[in-house]
Image (tube, protein in one colour):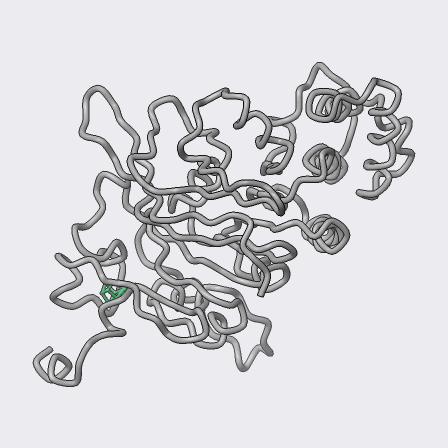
Length: 340
Ligand code: SF4
């Protein structure tokens, strides 16, 4: 079995404000990334997916802290580093960030510098992290732009982000993330802002690059269709909790948490007119983290909520084959069923 390269253990992230009590945005999350595999982190907006991903690179806002938990980075042949313990802007953190662990953001226009050419921005990654001179860095940049399918890579290296289409900008962003051959790639909704054709091309590209580079990938999305396309494993997040996790085929075949089931039944399906059924959206919205129910995070929207859900947080139930979920229904005894 391949050794994990990144292990998140019991990670909590808290935001503080001068006027209110601390708000726990992510609570006791466990995730594992393995070389060559993709873990999809899925859930609605506001569930803590991006905050969790940004914590891996310590790119959290100044008022965020990690009160407990570990982010263990274990590259092949090197000592294990707990990223959660590294000081902001310390040398070890800068050596990891953008180099061994890289990130692709949802909207390249807000992540790429508008006043530098694409080529200069990618060159810089290699001059900083690998000490390449400008000429060698530019050769690598051109090769990378070619590898991610940008036509006329040498000319495009001299273009500014606003001169490229959305799809080409996202490809340039991917090239930048891959500049230092990272062992872990975090892709934060990289296809959400793209049309479906470009989205399919980017997913194909990421799959191909993962096969070429053997990197582990954490793919954040709210789209279960994308999860089915790209992931080996899936973790479903709701209000800062991982409520279900497992092999992607297993979770799709037997979704066990009511939130996962609700996400699946809200996917539009192709059908002949006579067989069409109305979409079944999840009622309500994700509450703000400061309004998190005391017990199960999903209580306020769950159609199956019963007495203990309000007050007791469900434990993780092992469903076998590495599949687990947090729901009281999974541990409800026949005697309790009768009383309910
Ligand atoms: Fe619903 Fe209760 Fe299960 Fe939470 S623990 S998902 S409220 S049934």
